[in-house]
Image (cartoon, rainbow over the protein chains, first blue to last red):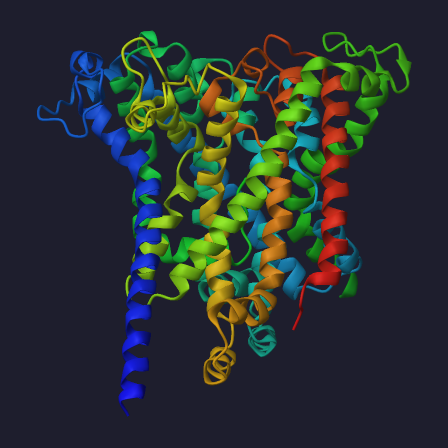
Length: 288
Length: 298
């Protein structure tokens, strides 16, 4: 009996050590993840002179100031970048949503010649990397005279084969009987889509919407190619310009204030929707 | 009736077809055409021959060789390392009863942040400036290592920051996929192993690893593809003039050929993009062949 107790005790001790190791690892990584965010907020609250006087960076600041935030909005057109990004994000996302819903409906409910062929073609397009098509798109948009316009920014980004596929799978889970019943009642396809399918698939649609918003907000490569007029910069290009020429280059606190302002909307969205976002991404989103 | 239905189906698809046609299918054909047109002039949109010159130019361009080298080093370091760390963290997460959601949410945060913006914070942490050696150098000094300029200094210092930041950026996705894979392993297997007195390590290699191998290989494949296309995180750390920083990547080379001070050469850009595509395709096919042999599909 004593023997058994001894083994149980040893096991418990082993488990405790194991738990400590696991927590240490997780807390260490949380620190690495969160520290840059802490540092960015902290630096943005230090005044320019205080920051530059610190040869050894301080981990707290006793005299926080908002002057950097004021400067971020006055010395560089940060508000302009912000408005541009909001317009770009909303218009692109909404247009894409309409196109995706219509296509997913066609693929999941309508019967027409060539459907399977087109769907297979769509699927094979999922493997094409953006880098291959962006070259011609750049030339196309330039030739159309759409550089430095919202239209030029938006048009190439309003379709996503992947989201069509995702929503089609979701639409197909809705029982066919509902559709047949609606047909008997004489409901038009469009009304059925609008009144029945969209409400039922709302969770998936919301997830796609949020993922696209994140993608648009962080877009960098295409906007950089297609805009060189500051009036049409999105936040990513804005931050790059700020880094290379804004605030006289060395005003790091002001730079950090801009970084905080740019990061905040997505962090708020994430805090509200983190369950949905993580679920959506684990269902097959990739970064980039 | 059937004709009407046909028409309706195509009508619903029309918007998608138009955009995919113009911005995906046509460019896909066009990129091949560009890559074979020699001496293409962007302003007059004329060319003076057809052949393989663009490919040979790109393959002999020292900037491209540098970009190729950087990209391969980045891939070879970050893909195994990030997958390994993600596996370690996911295993730790999966063994928790409490706080699992909290940690998971924290770890996922970098996924939604703007790569350019947070890259700037990393730059400041690592940068050695006239005012300050920066926080990381301070830490290094405290263990007796003298300061290094990670942003404009020696090549390996720069490569280290780049790899570190890349891992920081890609980890959320990998942790998420692996934790859901681990959570879906049938608990009965573990109970049986426990009754049999199987050691933790043996349980991991005999049960856990085979059960999550499909997700693991999915991550390795997408990890390779993603790492080969590295670009915006490099810009975030070293600025847009990557050639002079010696830190360009293949994708960066493509964009530099297209646009900016060195731009205006869509033919060279196309050839470089197609070389990249060929590399990625080859590696993906190799991955798939290996996974056929090693992965346990239920």
